[in-house]
Length: 404
Image (cartoon, rainbow, N blue to C red; front, side, top):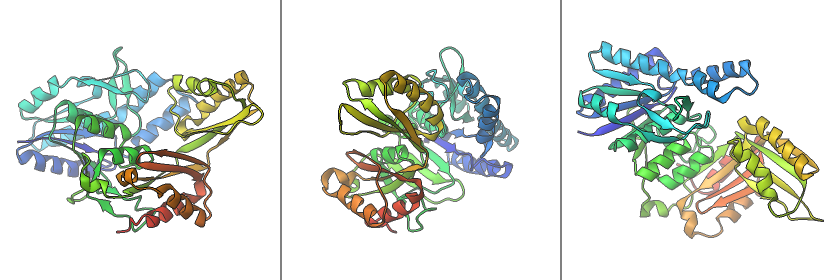
């Protein structure tokens, strides 16, 4: 007997018929003699509707009340799924995040899981029940409902798998695995059989939408094998697992892109020690994550400081940055939403020189200008004009031989 955690995304539970189809898959796993915990998202489109309603009420919604609203989508799904399983004669019990409980910090809409009390779930499993947990949500120490950010159901599933030392965590989506790039952009993209935690972590952080970044962090920390599969077929997917020697031999594993980026440039700021901290600390205090950062070479004691944030954070980040600019006597603050980040990822970069040059030459040959550059041991990212995103992805996919 194995303990299996299965997570189903919004598309997988998007209609009553799809919920019934998910139930069939759950029953098949259960009837094979396994204990089963199911984590589900809200039905596709529901969270977007709830977010839109919140934004109608307030231009910048109160964080606590925002979480109260958007957490309701998953409550519907767990109830419907449990209801259907019970109608078929199976023991099933649904839990909202606070009922488990899944304890988080208090950062509204971006909460991080701190601990999971597995007592109730273990008791239900021992009683032969299929346990269904609402993804994306938890509760803080003060009793407030919290949410983990978009895609947070992946994090819920992996965290639960880690807490209960599950044998595997299966993430069911509308795609049947991790691909070398987005198949909607590049028809020659191919499915990867297995990928390391580090590579998946980079791809998730760089815009690949298959897994949420924090779910990969949990998987790596607690050595949880994550099987990414489609809920629409029985195909084997992609296993996200520990690094091995075979993976190290691949130069580039995938090409990722992220159109959810915006650029802010603080122009003519005095080039003095601590200026970066003065600009970035207020953003950090407001729980706004800064991604890429570039500071120009100082000229006449002045410099330009450029960084990127998500488009969702741009409005608030601009308000904060303009205040900082006044305090530091910077000349002006500029912003640009029409950018995109395109990245290559691969463990093989650790031991191969010239990868960046190959990337830059390929982009230049296709008339794609690079605005910003960021690197790590196994990735290279560039910011380009948004209109060149698809072309850049296809060029790099071809350049590094990722065709099927």
